[in-house]
Length: 210
Image (spheres, rainbow, N blue to C red):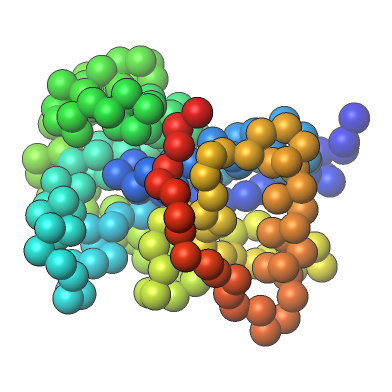
């Protein structure tokens, strides 16, 4: 058994709206079973990230509906502790992405109840009362990697023992088993290389929620 002090904590910033972050989060949950790593969940916001950027009208319209879920996540964490974020994200993501349900109040309420949380937390979706905390959580994550990327952001002790942060990985479908573990090992190795910034290729497939 791995000693507790040998385990790493991977901080993961997510926006429930993003299907690619959802894929990465399911991969990281798989990694937890195969490598000595524990995930600590945090909220970031694509709406906050893009509010002052020149983006296509269709994407702007999509982001107009992106405030509700992240506000509810922040409200849940403030009232019930950060430890509820992982299971709430799982319930929201399953409904938003795997089940393709509308991102409306009814879906959010169902996710809250399934996560063992009060349905009335959905009230937070329609108020800016939690926006200061939301922006602070977002700023913490995006501040580690810069404004040119989105969600997810992961920060973890790298292969050389120093904390590293990066966007992604962006992958579909979610790697399972030893493939997930190998991707984790390789990601840490690459991210730990001083001066390393980017590996990228054109996406030829959309998210596959297998």
